[in-house]
Length: 191
Image (tube, rainbow, N blue to C red; front, top):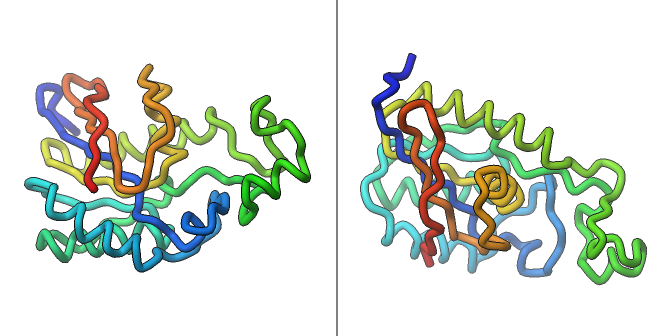
């Protein structure tokens, strides 16, 4: 049980560049690894982080590898894996480029239409908020680094009435849990 006055700090960070990011492919829950550039981004980002008590990651390799690199640099570990920090499903768009999607589903991206298998915000937020609640309960009062994915972080930001647009690799959102409430802080650039 968490103490209502206890402050837990969460920095939710998008993973480093993956091989599919470099090819501009929609990933969703596919599991491409980090590119060499993504590994370098994780090393650079670790230099800008202050004290971190615990590192928690999505199970997807691009996030887990980012978290492991940062953890090794900071001397924090092992990385804790939470399944529900995984990216939303992109359904039939997984592995496709925006150009591929526009050819096969003309106008869908601009009109916010999505293909079969797409994970919409409501179920994504339900699992994300449940995961955050579990993480906060497990490490109440800690300074936490959560390595996850752009779609998940963006949906959470919108839920918290923050809308700073797309979230680049190794950028993140600072959040605080205090008094039983999750409060959004500033958007941070780690590279």
